[in-house]
Amino acid sequence: MNRRSLRRWIRKDGMKALWFLAPSLIGFACFYIIPFIMGIYKSFTDGSLGGTFVGLDNYNEVLSSGSFHKASVNMLIFTGIGVPLVIALSLILALLLNRPLFMRNWLRTSFIMPLVVPVASVVMIWQILFDWNGTLNAWLHHFHKERIDWMQSDWSMSVVILMYLWKNIGYNMILFLAGLQSIPKDYYETARVEGAGRIRQLFHITLIYLTPTIFFVVLISIINSFKVFRETYLLAGDYPYDRIYMMQHYMNNMFSSLDIQKLTAAATLMVGFIVILVMGLLSVERRFRDNLE
Image (tube, rainbow, N blue to C red; front, top):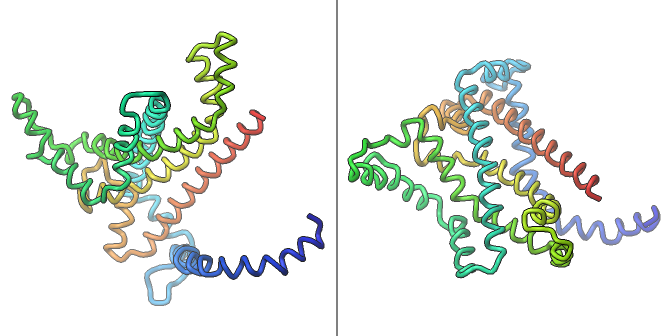
C-alpha cells in the first residue's frame, strides 16, 4: 500500500472505523487512562487541599515502609511458586487430555467449572474446608491429630496457592489444548517413522511448537497472580496473617485511611513492575521466535 492509497483509505474507511470505535475508546479513556494519569499526578502531591507538589517524597515513604516490604516479598513468593506450578500442572493435564482417554470430555468440563462458579461460593467452600472447625480439622481430630489454624499460620500461603491453582488450571489447560491441537500431526508421524520416542517428540516437537502458547500462559498466569487479593481478602480480611499480606492489602488499607497519595504511589510502582515484567517476557518470546524461524 503506497502513501496515496493509504491516505485514501484513511479518508474513506478510517473515519468509519473511528466512529465505530469511538464509544469504546471514550469509555476506556474515561475509566482507565484518565484515572491512571490523575493517580500518577496524585502520587507526586501531598494531602493538602489542592495538592502541593512534593516530588518523590511519597515514593520514598512507600519504599521505606515495612508493610510495603512485607507485601512485596509475599507477592513475589506467591508468584514465584504459584505461576510455575500452575503452568506445569495445566500443561501435564493438557497433554493427558489431548489423548483418547475414558471420560475425557467430562474431565475437561470439570476443570473448567472453577471459571463459572461465583467467587463468594468458592470462598465459602474453602472456608468450610480450612476453618478451625472445618472439614480438614475434623478429619485430623478424627485421626487423633492436632488441629491446624490454616489461615493464621505458615500454612496460609499454601492455602492461597492451592486456591490459585484450583481456579486457574482449567483456563490454562484449555489454552494448552488449543496449542497442542494446532500442531500438525504429520510431524509426529514423521518422528515415529524415524524412530523418535515419546520423550524426544515432547521436547523436539511439542514444546518447541507450543512455545508461543507457553509464553502467553506465563503472561496470563503472572497477571492473575496479582489479582488474588479478592479471594485472600474474603478468606482472611483486611489484616491477614503476615505470610499472605499481599500488595493489594497494603493499597486497600491505604485507601481505608484515605492516604490517597501513598496508595497511588504504591499502585504506580506495582503497574511499573508489571509493565517491565511483561515487556521482558515479550522480548524473550520475540527473540525465541526469531531463532526458531
